[in-house]
Image (cartoon, rainbow, N blue to C red; front, side):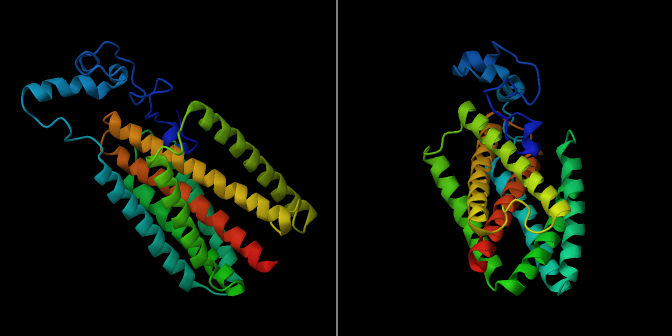
Length: 282
C-alpha cells in the first residue's frame, strides 16, 4: 500500500506492494520469519539485524522509529505552522494579504516538492516548509476572517474533529485501508485535482467563478468531497505510520511521518475554510 501522500509514496512502509523493506530487496526465509512465524518479517531488512543484537543483549529497538518520535516530530512541525500562521495573521492587513499568501504558498510548495523527492528527510527543510505554510495559512485566514469573522477558528475545530474521527475509526477498524480503498482514493483524488485545475483555467481566462466549483451548491458539494478525500488521505497516512512502526523503520523516518501528516492536515483545513466561507456567504 502506497500512500497518496508524496512523502510516503517514495518509501513503502507496508506489506502489500513489496516495499515493506523500505526499498530493500526481500529477504525471504530470514530468521525473523522462522522464529516468529510472521510471513512479512522476511521482507524487513531490520529483522535480521535484530538477531545479533538480541544475542549480545543490546536493545534491538534503539534506532527504530517509535510512536513517541512521530508524535514529537509532528508536534514540532505543526507548532512551526501555528507560529508562522500567527505571524502571517498579524503581519499584514487588507488586500496585501493575498499577494503575501500566494508568495508564501509558492515557496512552501517548492520546499515541499524538494523534500518529497529527497531520499532522506531533512529536518531543517521540513521545518522551513512548515514555516512558510504557516505564513500562507495565517495571511489567508486573516483575509477570510475580515469577511467572515470566526471562520478560521471554525475551520480549525472542524479539522480537529476530522482528525479525531478518522483516528478513532482507524483504530477501531471501522476504516480498513486495503488495496481497493487505496485505488478508490487515488482515482477520486486524480479526478478532484483535474477538476480543480480545469476550474482554475476557466477562472484565469474566462473570469468569474470558472465552472462554479467555488461557490453555490456545486461549491458546497465540491468542498465536502475535498474534506472526505482529506480524511481518506489521513487514513492512508495512519496506515503508513503503523507499518513503519511494525517494520522497524529508522528513527529519522518519523520526520517524514510528521511531514506527511502536516500536508494532509493543511489540505483538510483549507477545504474546511473554503466550505465555511461558501456556507456563510450564501
